[in-house]
Amino acid sequence: MLSNIPWLLAASLLTATLLIYFPYIFVVVGRWQAGFDMAAPRSLFEKLPPFAQRAVWAHENSFETFMPFAAAVLLTLFAGVNNATVAIASLSFVAARFLYSICYIANFPLGRSLMFGVGTAATLTLFWQSLTALSR
Image (tube, rainbow, N blue to C red):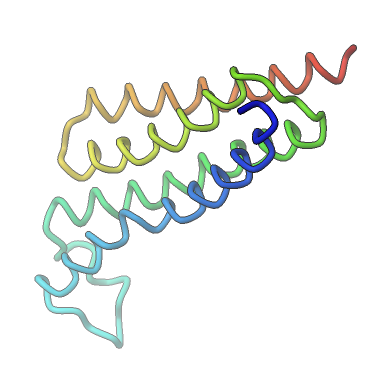
């Protein structure tokens, strides 16, 4: 399994990229419910149902967390770290970000906060593993 770490990291990066847009599915549903106006799509936010407003926030937060994760993955690949900790961290980030969006849209703040913490810990773990390997 450890020989497949670069593939796993690349797949995690691709999946995390796609997960940025996962909450947007719910935004589209909310826009249709609120009466989408092609002439002023951003002015519709106040008319969106609460779940769709939360989906917008989950979507925006996904961009914010993706950048450090992507940097950590690229640094891990550059450092050539191939261990189980890196595998678990990259998979944990992806799972946490999926569950983060679900919890945010479903209005489960404790779950959302926990998943944010897991994702952040996973990113920091990747950075730590990379920096430790590079310092040797």
